[in-house]
Amino acid sequence: MGRVDENLVQRCQEGDLDAFDQIVEEYSQKVYNLTYRMIGNPADASDLSQEVFVRVYRSLNNFRGESSFSTWLYRIATNVCLDEIRRRNRKSAIPLKQRICIDDEQCRDIPDWSTVPETIVQSKELQEEIQGMINSLNPEYRLVIILRDIQGYSYAEIGEIINCSIGTVKSRLSRARKSLKMKIKEYWEHREQMLRLSE
Amino acid sequence: MQCSNVHDISSLYLDGLLSPEQVEMLEQHLAVCTECCSEIEALRHTIQALSALQVLDPPTEFRQQLMERLEGELKRKSLWSRIVHTIPIYRWAAVACVALALVVTFQQVGRLRTLERLKLSPADRETQITATGEQDLLETMRNVEGTNQIQMTTSVAKENLPDGIQIEDSGKKVADDSSDNSLFIDEISLKMKETASDSSDNLGSTLETLNSVVDQKVVKKANLSLEVVNLEQSEKKVMKMIDTNGARNWFIKNSFRTAGRQGLSRGDYLVSVPQQDFYLAVDSMETLGVLKEKELSLEDVNQRYTDLTTRILNFQSEENKLMETLGNPRVADENGQLQEELNQIRQNKQSVVQELEQLNNYIEYSTIQLILLENHFSGSGAGN
Image 1 (spheres, rainbow over the protein chains, first blue to last red):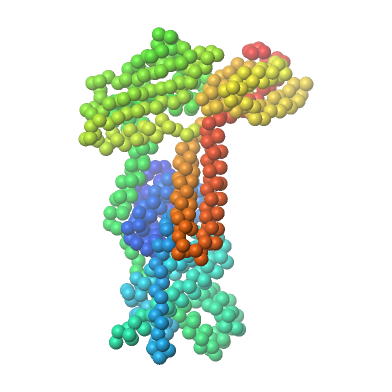
Image 2: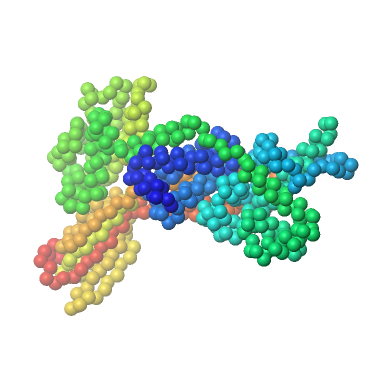
């Protein structure tokens, strides 16, 4: 934990609300992005992020510095998200679009997902689709992929945040990425086919 | 290297977490296998697409809303200063709550008795107390003489009431102890009614806070060490006391005697009594010998209680949703997995329910650790 965090946390534990405001300022963006990517809509992400900080505030006296403050905070954030997802109707996940049945002729010459240009990989259209695909993953896979590939945490940090071994992080991440890769591939092929049909 | 091995380690390869030997073997394979090469590129693109996702800012009003919410919580915590300094009309209530807090905090016997025991004369069975400050209330409490059951009605001078606010009823109640006419404040509940729609938020919040304060969840414990001349006789008195109060649910959870030097012994007794009898039991036990050590402790478990209750409600809500889903024919093929999930939720709920029951038990029943130390030269002879 950084020195700034230590001082801030101590001041918060002493009831200094301004100090807590600084913590909110420092972490709100990351927490909001985590909740948004986990839940998939901005209004709920905002409510959940508020819930995260309220829980952090109420639990500050239980923080004893055994892990870094940020790890502790993200652990609360991930728990809030997982609780919320479990609470929701599990059938509300966005279904994958079904691939349209077409003949072999039409399947030919569709550019493979592995060969598309980077500009398309980063296009807004694809980003929106990817959010839907993330939401269709199992919550545990969703969490590791967000923490690693979107928020950039190391395997060890993720292990600390979600309270599991590095081995578990590795296997979950590998499966999550493969699952997402398949979904993107299906989407890509579907998209290309639709474009051809409309021509 | 086989293609299946490549699939196993491709994710680690892209994160640079393979050993140099593994990397070399993998790259040798990729040089000759276009299919694996394509798979790894697709995975690389997937990771790129994820890392390219836009970083979003929380809504502009996010921090302000959050801080307002937290300030509200903080205000509740500083209830006393708000009541006493900013809302004089409720000062008497604050004083009553302070008195309760003092009862459980102060260890001095004299102070405890002053605050806990109200002795009223029969004529004072329905006594109206008008108190405008701590001194008034404490003075009134000291001057009232006892009976075995009272209904204490508290009223506030009309001119002190803000427009539109009525105090409908207040004050009760105290458990009776017919054996010695002592009375113990168990709780003070306040029922207040807002009759005007334009009452300030400030007041509404205060009422809410006040209600939460008077409904405290606390665990009371005591440690008593007494010197007695004859352990056997004193132990009999302890047993008799517990037997006599058996109907009130006093009981001994554990007891043992150890022999000391020069034939002197020590007795340890773990006594459990309903919370409302806690101070009565402590006082009664004190009379059995010469008090050497007394420690009263009060643990505030409100937060824990609320957390457990909330968790149970959450589990219940999850359970209900899963039950609904289970009844849906469209998910018939997933019934096995759903049932497994449902069982897990029920197990979790059951475990939290047990925890709450245990906590409730600790709240409802206080424990007193009584130690009797035999000392033939003990000067008091109190109770011996």
